[in-house]
Length: 196
Image (cartoon, rainbow, N blue to C red; front, side, top):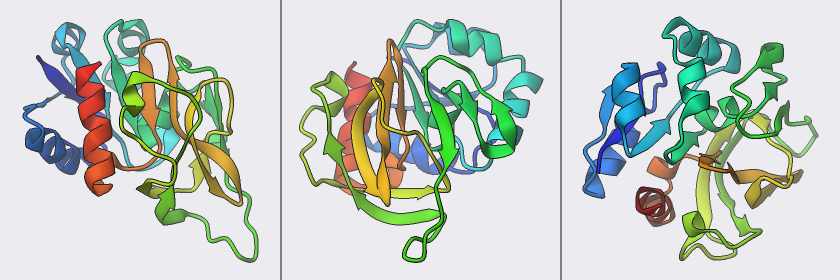
């Protein structure tokens, strides 16, 4: 099985790659369209902001390619948000493969933005990506923008309001938290993705 990490400039690429190696998958880091198209699984990692993230994908000529992929694709953190239609962050048009909008968390006296740290997961549906995931399992988040709960939501979490922790539409999947930093739960979900 060939797995590629799209080299879109995310700072979490090394840790995602190492997490995959622990699962027996040696993921190539690439921006080569032919290599991405030929892979069995594609992962779009990302840490940073939506505007520069999309600018990088455009600069690499990968926007239409990613939209056309038919194999399982996983966006992680910012990578998940880039799979959506639009982000409020810098009013950014994203890839549009998942019919969702990305919105900034509303600030409140008892809530710090960014949302940073461990939070509990609540599976909303049955899906192969969620095999052996349980209500109340914990994952590690770092983000200021989130996807509201919608028809694409597989798992939600709560930070002032419910938001999407895992989303999917067709062959496109996203995890808002960092599976590579979420201990056993993250490893389990990455393994489930590799098994899709």
